[in-house]
Length: 120
Image 1 (cartoon, rainbow, N blue to C red):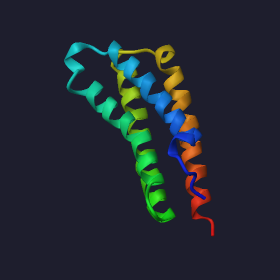
Image 2 (image 1 turned 90 degrees about the horizontal axis):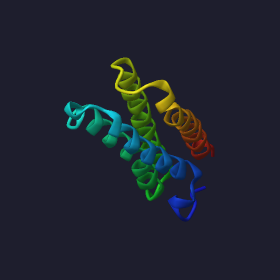
Image 3 (image 1 turned 45 degrees about the horizontal axis):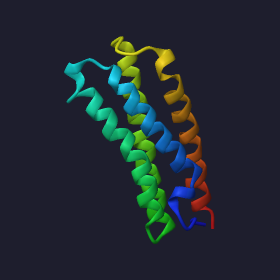
Image 4 (image 1 turned 180 degrees about the vertical axis):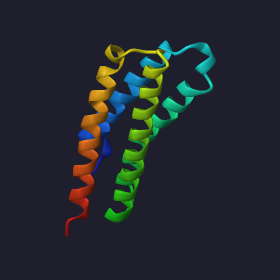
């Protein structure tokens, strides 16, 4: 079921798009959040494509699914952090709409990919 190159996976490509988007988004956060919320958001978003790639490189589908689960956890962590930024009025919903749409899309793709790997 695995492709030969994780870079061919649309979900990985979308996760890379999300990474770029979030790195642009955190520039709007106040300087006092440089080592707090913005650092946490950058780590969470980088974890998403990284875990997709690492999982694809694993030998078994069971391991792959585990890494997809970790990627999904980081995705929801990021979603929560974006919501925190909105509630603190650091950024507004217009600024986050592309990120939120990507999060929704990536979540569905991760679920589909994991489910396809679980089938006999």
